[in-house]
Length: 320
Length: 246
Figure 1 (tube, chains in turn red, blue):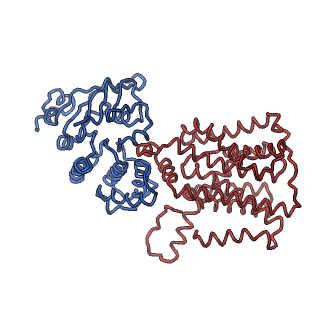
Figure 2: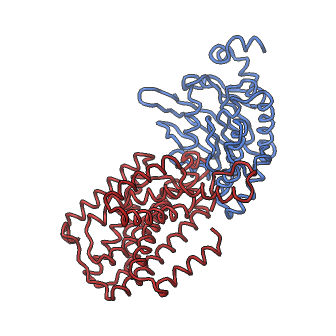
Figure 3: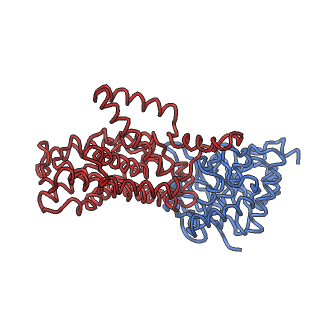
């Protein structure tokens, strides 16, 4: 996307709450920002480095519980402590990443998934986290519409921060190293890429941003429970959105998240939650089988094809 | 002339299989040294030990007087050893230029991504890939991919270059120009070369010294001519026929 298009879009999103948008559209966009931020953050390790984590719900939940507990026990606003949630998630990522990062391919995917389940089981059983009863927080001190606006802006800010981080990684030296790791880790090491250090840095960034998202989300819910803060579906959804949109750039996961969020919403409104899930799942499976590189490369191709049809086969590789 | 690489009594076994049995040799600065031997004699294992991908069970490897045993492969690359792989392993999802730029950024740790990409073009030209700048790796022939790997290795700024069968699968014309390229790398860039090779014409035409491995042991080392004349080498490796033809 061009710089101008991004500026216009961000400008529109900034004024939207003041030009008549009520609770529903604000809530819909809020959750879109949230999913998009999660997908973009996941993509730093899953897409750029090619390490498919299925355990990102752990980072989300750790961020959420950190801010929740700090609010309940210390009275600190989650808007202030969300970064602490991010740090806790990142530290956890560093600790678990060191052993996990020795595994490649499906082994890494399975171990991260199991880690996510272990953290959920722990939180369910520690009494000081509220355990299976969940954690009740003081309600945010705003009227419903004002609260929607506040959380809308908070999640928008987290989303923008995530995109800026992912973009900086992608176009910088770190992105080059992560790509080399994704393509061939041994060859990457042979040209001097410190693979372990880079992978753990990428995982920590990814986890930290995901924890930040979880921190904001927890405050919005006011009541959190391991069943939805450490939900395996969240981990899977982050993977799906990134795959759907395309993993090569920061924009693919955003596209994937927007498509997932809106299609899901429309199907839910028209034909109900359960049936929507089935149709939605089938649709996703089809897209992933038919478009393994995601939607973005094909959209870019379409755009390139329009002005000059005889220009030959467009290059399938997308660069941001 | 100083010693670039010194391999001291290196042994390596995989389970019950002894792959290297107290192997010792050295590579002098500025030399082109060939490491030859039948399949399974331990050549690639030796390369993997020198570059840190494997750890020897016993013995030591010194590069410019410093032991590299136990160091991570990326650290050894930073010290100045670059390698190519027996089966080519370019980064296929990246362009040719990005492949080399990655090596500049991480091998020497210098400059910005943009500068690295600019410099990468020079390396592609150096190895004769001027027509393949900014192309996808898939468009290259096998010979082209091998040259790309060579450019990537050179871009890390090595003192010692390990070439694992870069001449295999090349036709005579390609292999002739690749030989000229290796000589230029040594003469112009002053990079010491250790190469594993099966193509005897290349080994004899290119190498100052040849080390012969058989079943994990050094059975002979010396000048190309001396190796060709060695009756044991002839019998085990070159075959009577090749010896007779010379």
